Image (cartoon, rainbow, N blue to C red; front, side, top):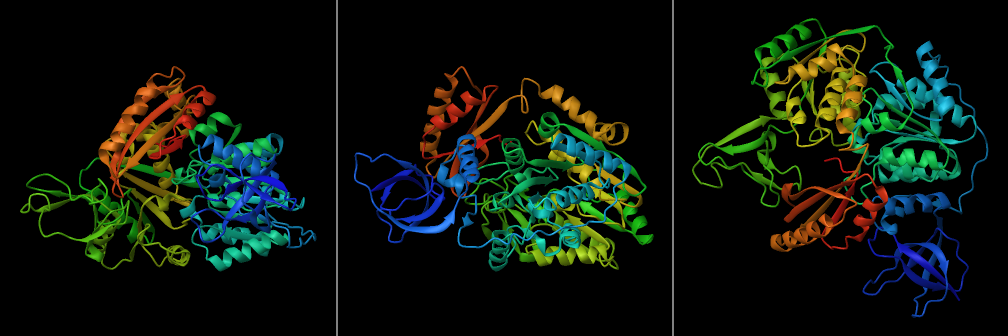
Amino acid sequence: MNYYEVAILKSPQENLTYQSLDEIENGTKVFISLRNRKNLIEAVVVKKVEEPTFKCSDIGEITSFFYSTEMLEIATFISQYYVCSFGEAISLYIPFNKEIKINEEQQLFDSKIVLSKEQEKAFEFYLQKKQFLLFANTGSGKTEIYIKAIEKVLNANANAILLMPEISLTPQMENRLEKVFGNSVAIWHSKVTKKRKEQILEGIYTGNIKVVAGARSALFLPFKNLKLIVVDEEHDESYKSDSKPRYNAKDLSIYIAKKYNLNLILGSATASIGSFHKLPFIRLKKTYFDTSKRVYFDNSSQELSVAIIDKISTTLSRGNQVIVFLPTRANFKYQICTSCGKSVECPYCSVSMSLHKNDLALKCHYCGYTQKIPDSCPSCGNGIIHNLRVGTAEVEERLKEFFPQKIVKRFDRDEIKTDNKLKSVLNEFNSNKIDILVGTQMLSKGHDYHNVKLAVVLGIDSVLNMNSYKSRERALSLLIQIAGRSGRKGEGEVIVQTQNEEFFDYYINSSDYEEFLKSELEFREGLYPPYLKMAKIIFAHANGLKVKDELDRYVKLLKQNGNIEVVGFGQSPIFKLANKYRYEIIIRSSNIKELLKVLHSIKSTMVTIDMDTNF
């Protein structure tokens, strides 16, 4: 009889021991039975072990699917660093299939791309350094360098992955890749149908699909000979998973590339401080097309001020297009009572409900709860509800009133729910069938709009004033990304509504983002990442007193540990979420081993660990 340690896929449970008459290789996917479960459940064989002192159950079924040694090693790292079980970590991967034959036939590609002198310099830098940061201004031609790097790898009979933030998977990138790599390229993200995903996996198994462009989950596809990872818009925080395991796909790409000596390109016009600090970089400042940009500031408290409407009107009269950015979707973010001053909150979360006029409803953007718009204040019963902090839907409505002859459309998560909708809106906009596009951060995600001559930025102060050490970096990066959509060819204008003109003006007009990164690194030294490691410990439970007691117990324990520092603790910014009360502790340390030791020692059933928190 043989004995094996197995990990249950997607389970937080510790590994278990099972027996089998068969010799089973490490990494093999199997099915096992568990007490109280009728059906067999999926598991993976981690390693062969000595016969235990207790009685073991039999492994039910051995499949042809397996996880490679590299997958097992990376999953081990994920479980240790991001504080989760091995079963949860390995579940990120899609396993190999022994039964499918690989097509060994090599295909050669010729992109016919001729790089400029600046791009050539960057490509040479990549060949020398192997892993680097392509710190390239908007419109300077990062994509051509990506394609050249992918072409080189594929022509050496290896594979490549190009990661992009989920909501920025643009048809433009898809078209450009398909033009060069044809059927050897596939697009992978959450909106791809189940049937198409099965076809893509079949293509990866056979070797017919050699490169995948996709969201963070593309990093875990079963490529046999992965040699290049490209992370586009590497500064984007959507690379960090907000569910367990709370890994960061960008950071994980750096780890994988260094561990297995792969090629790695991180690309961004607004490089993240961590990447700027960790990796060798090269700047690309010269834009592909001759462009010039004028930035204006508007300190009006009115969302669509006279100055903004005049600028939009002038741009439209010249036959050009406009994009309008604001960080809030729906019609209004907050509903406040004029009598008692209380907001209309979600009954399950301690957040204000957002007004969606078209649906005649208030919606919670956290748990999805929806209710009809109240006639009067639910708290005092007679107050009138006043709307605060305008959202995309409201701005879209107002612009339609100002410009009734023009086509105004929205570009946010409420409006863009499918891949087809994303493609159709972008195609309409690029074909000049939409005059004004109003949207959230989706507007900033690398889309190429050649007739946009004005970018209007509203609500940027709400990003700058967030309670986070990253607020300055987030706000400035977002502004530069949005501004970069205007004047991709020729002249462009940007109008920014802000009460913080001095800060934005200095780094937009007088200096550049590299200087900002250097000054921000000075400010963070000895206090914040990348110099220290930070983690957030979140306690959540339906019983508010019980969870508060758990918080207090761990605060006391953690404060006694001299290797870490408790930065702060208390109620989470969103105190109640999906009917659970939430408290948190933020800790930091320059000693990563001690920090992880502490995090792994927390055994509470109420806890979630967020390593490298984005707070």
